[in-house]
Image 1 (cartoon, rainbow, N blue to C red):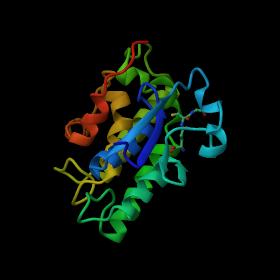
Image 2 (image 1 turned 135 degrees about the vertical axis):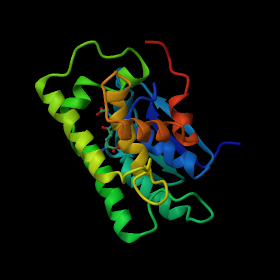
Image 3 (image 1 turned 180 degrees about the horizontal axis):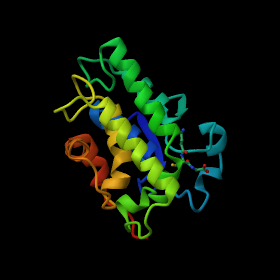
Image 4 (image 1 turned 180 degrees about the vertical axis):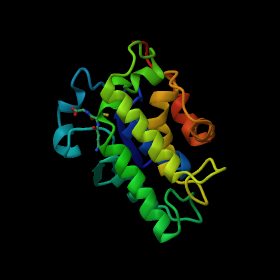
Length: 212
Ligand SMILES: N[C@@H](CCC(=O)N[C@@H](CS)C(=O)NCC(=O)O)C(=O)O
């Protein structure tokens, strides 16, 4: 039987925003179906998708009559609809930690342009980057590492007292460096490794992807 939740995603599953939505669904252990759109072929501009999805982008969650784009809105919707403790928390219980988690999520979504361009997610799941980082790329790499070391408590591999989706989002951004052989601080390496071994993250990473 088809599940009631449907998620429109990029066909190769390499979008960091698809990643967040999938991790949220996996963490909540919700049944869901995905529809892969070939963004290079312009599937997101075809038919009724631009109108229904409102933004013409992926991911977009469909829950009966609700069409909801924007990965952070999807995370928050699932968090509020499928409440802890019956379902895994995506955001910290503590108010201040929750605010900080949202800050981390906003930061990784709105900054690091040079890193996104020079270490696109295709270099995580397909061919590795061949060119060294430009000056701007190095600045971005230093910035995300300094940020991580500042927000990650000493001796820990998660940002808050319990796991949150901000951990996964931040680790995904750092993997652009780690998977491409960038030397990072041991604390950052340990953090990324711990996050990458989480079942929800593994479910995304291990997805079989079409050849390019
Ligand atoms: N702020 C959005 C960003 C979504 C986004 O930029 N998606 C890209 C793929 S990574 C997309 O759909 N691009 C297709 C297009 O713009 O036509 C989110 O968090 O979900």
